[in-house]
Length: 235
Image 1 (spheres, rainbow, N blue to C red):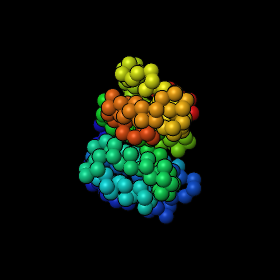
Image 2: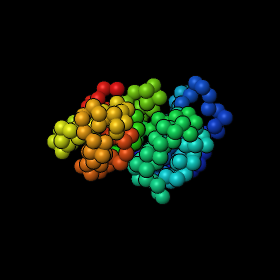
Image 3: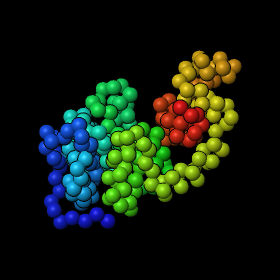
Image 4: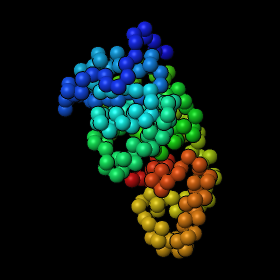
């Protein structure tokens, strides 16, 4: 439990003018002021990390992500107005469209370890998922790791995913798995249809069946991410 008697602040943390190329700019997005305060106090002791801003509101997190250009967003699932999963999905879309500066990496810091929350966040492109039972030092190391391009997962989160993968495979037919493999490699519906010798509308049916069987996959991008995360394709 992170405790503090200091009043929490919203909006800007450190003056962004002190954010240099040698420091990692971080945005804290967590509904609990005590959590944000504890994280900020720990980060302020570091030489290489600086808090650019903080908020407990999802819509404000989107605005700050675009105006402050943080390198890392420490994101909780429970946010007001716009939930953390929606924030992650919208930021992932902005990254794909190259319409957000800095391409911020997302490190989830949550009390939830339910498989659907974990998968929804990973499918939305987050680079790490830590639990609030983790030490603050682990969060600091996680911030540094995701900036370096690494994926950071709490051990309990990894165990949840490993138990869950066989369930997903059993739900998908061999043809549906083949369609997702080819989709993840960047093939169009027509190219998939030619390779599998089926009609393009049949490809679409298989894709939509996948959405139905794995309801937290809602797009081709998320289906492709699922295939890569679960080692269905190596790319």
